[in-house]
Length: 53
Image (cartoon, rainbow, N blue to C red; front, side, top):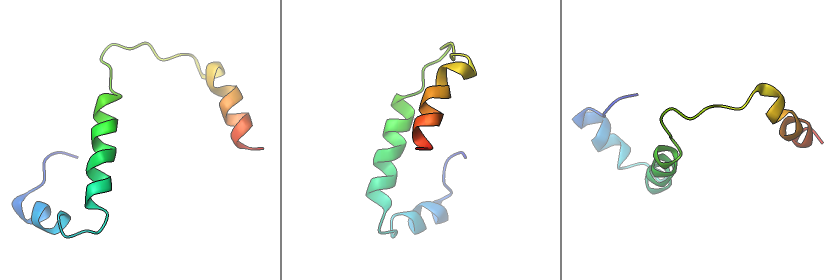
């Protein structure tokens, strides 16, 4: 985590997946909501079971 060093940034921009990684990071940042109450684990049971089928 945390900001890249100059060297890390220079290496990162050479990666073939760089644009996709930046887009994913933008979506990840937008999905963060402070003080959001997470549903109990039972709420997710259906999703877990469906993914196992």
